Length: 233
Image 1 (tube, one colour):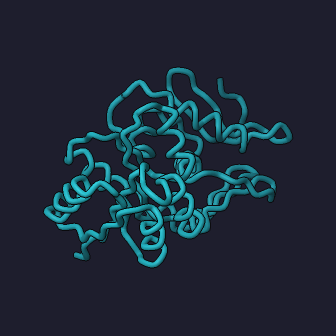
Image 2 (cartoon, rainbow, N blue to C red):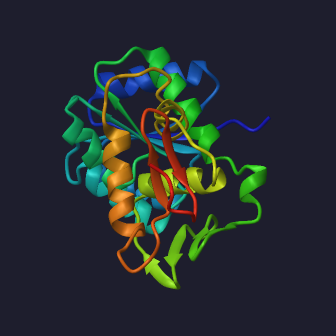
């Protein structure tokens, strides 16, 4: 079985060594970048299974590094690390394209679980092999990560795309907030966060334009559904 190679972008030597040693003990191959510019260059020059990216970095911060990687490698799995735990900080991370966000200090077992979740979510599923998902006049290309409605291109962040894709793969089915938290954010327990509601609103503003029938519906107390008929509550 091929080992996963991970790039850790971390400027604090003790933290970098802690993460490197822990991941190597779990059979990962690790490269270290000590600043944002080096991290961006290494990410673009090499093919990594995933990138563990600190936010507070010299030369380029983690948000900037994440944007650069996303522009050049849209499918690259990224796990962000930060000492900031406010919801605004997490949303800023997801807006730049990270797949998950872990707050420092953290237990190493949680880092390992989050990393495994990011790697699993990055693997193509049977349902994605067709690479084109259609719901009404909405078209989602899972290969190019392009979204169109009535042939008009819609720009989405990586997290918005992942959320829309999951809803589309399960179109006409009500998906609970708990399931979305677990499948899209890798959170297996209710933290009380409203991140789902925030991202559903982001998608609605981009997908459900006034000129077209509403596709994203709320089932109060149950979850969300992506479907053509607009008779949901």
